[in-house]
Length: 375
Image 1: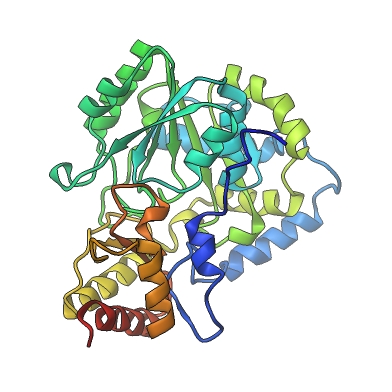
Image 2 (image 1 turned 30 degrees about the vertical axis):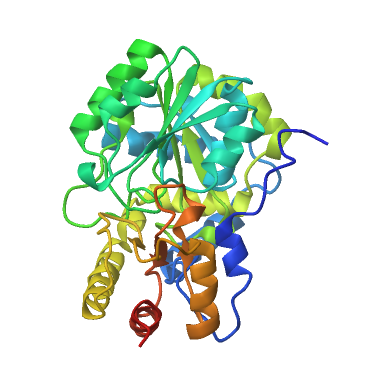
């Protein structure tokens, strides 16, 4: 057995999800409530019918990679080309491809706490070491440059940022990313910029990517959340040409290529990037409704700046967060995710997904209030 994977367990997200019943109000998984846009799907099928069947190039269809490069050239104001793009089977595979290709045993990866639950296990699989930086209310749950600088050693290979992040939905500002880019250049590490939720921001200020400030950025993203395309498993990675060349044979051995139908979907999206932002206003409205419900039932929360999750620090100090979520499920038939799935800072939190109907969100939050206040 591979010693690096023997202790890898299913995430607490999946463990709690598997306990739900058919009657449960599910406010757990990051599954978009809206269906795939009908116009987008119709155009995808038309493109697929006119596309040559069989494998694509290992890195993805050249025409799709050109469109992704063009889009990010405009958003980052830096010229990019198709040789800097790899089309992947969702962002999960893109992350694993980057970790597998770049990390050696003993390397160090800096990760915020809390953070997306898959980062740490993937790093561990490469026999690399994790260094976490606790986020705090003092800094509005944002990473600080000072904390990152204090954590850097000669073994630091990667620093992971996500904006909006999961589970907190916080957005990194330009000044932070510029400073991080300077550190990356100075200490020769790479920035993994997880941008899966980048299109789902609240307000008028679009998130900035670290890609705009340094070539030592590896962008990871997908269409799962922004386009309700979770089951299509289509994502992409953007990096320096030298890194993409390094990753190409790994991509070939790992998956050969992403599914052609899913690549056709992505090509339609990047032919008209308006598809990326069609759902933004919808989730902004969902957050407004969720916030109103939380305040109505006096449930404390940490306000997100994007995405479709909200973290609520409501677990009693003497109670395990997973056990609290099981209690909520058994007593009120509501499924939420324990904050402990994302790190130690969030041990006494729950994460609520507001990608659901207004009725289910309102009912679920009311039931959460019953458990908190023993109503």
